[in-house]
Length: 69
Image (cartoon, rainbow, N blue to C red; front, side, top):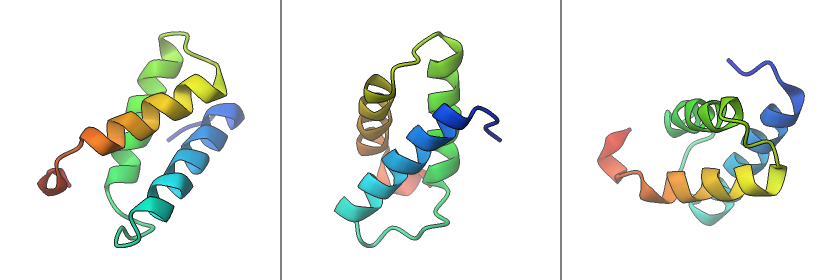
């Protein structure tokens, strides 16, 4: 889904950090797709700093209800 290398790197980092904190989340969990879409939207809105995108991604995942996925 994501073609930009810097954005893909941020998604990978956020997903790794999230899974480290939530050990019960599977690597193929559908939340990763939701995360990718969310960060793609931020990227397209010209948020391109990796640290800022990482923060947005982690906050987004923490706000998702457990039954969302």
